[in-house]
Image (cartoon, rainbow over all chains, first blue to last red; front, side, top):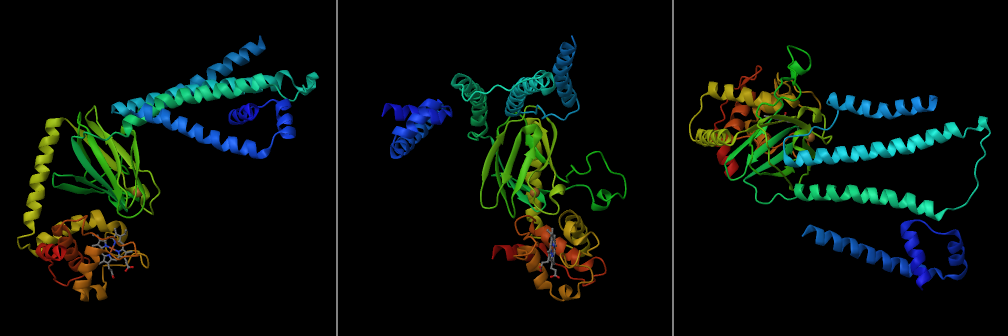
Length: 57
Length: 372
Ligand SMILES: [Cu+2]
């Protein structure tokens, strides 16, 4: 699970180690990446919204 | 040594060209409001960031092209990934972007806060003129291109600002917060005055807000910045910023004149009076489409001179000018011209250029129609 989160974070940033990418493709399950991706996308939006709202005060 | 000279020359060219561009007035103006100053300094900050990045990136590129050229036997390096370098070249732009976003957002916040204004001005875009209304002051007027068509086409002396001149400028006070409420009667226009750092679309059915607090009295010019039809280039903006007392005096005078105009509705006007007044309004408002001599530009813009059918239909003539022709380019003038002006312009059209109907349309008749 932790490795999925790390890979999604790497995808957000846009840089991933080749070795990790191979491992993900061989061992990981696509649904896990999609689910964690959507979830963390929402978290990201929430964080940005929170910063915007508190900065606008 | 040679490389050194090339590099020094390269590093000098960019600032040199930049200085030249600024000295020539090609740069964005500093402007006359606190916000415009902030926008300008943001613009310069970001510009220099871009220059530095450009010099580094292109410098590295040209240096590599030159230094590792094929004829000197350079061999390409083959490697697949380098996470550290990749992280660095992602993180640096990210930090630069955040560094630019923080001050930019702070300025935007100020620009978007039109609260606590001392004066509200409604700005309405129309094909092809601007209409200004001082809300709650009973003062409103239309600002048309001031230079006659013939002069623009090359007959007669053209002034320096002949395409940026209006018949009546927008007049605003300095040191007071003025809120703009901006909309349009027909298509999307954009009210743009560089010295205020205001460029705001005026959209039919929407009211956009903006504001200024001008620091220095003076005359500031602008233009419509949204392609809005054939005369898009002929609806300039002139803004005259006056000292507060001068502005108050101006406003009082305009209020007085507006009251006079309103009382003009109650009295009888002579044919000559209406003709004189009508000619003025016709040339300012109608001539751009129907031509100064009433010949129009058929089939798009009908001729009014010698228009027999129209001369026989006084009622339809009034109706057309008051309410326009929906679905055609003929605007309604019920809100943009006063009853006196509408009456005068119709009387003028019915008696000028050989249209000798002898008809007089009284302002009171128009006023009654508008009340219906
Ligand atoms: Cu326009």
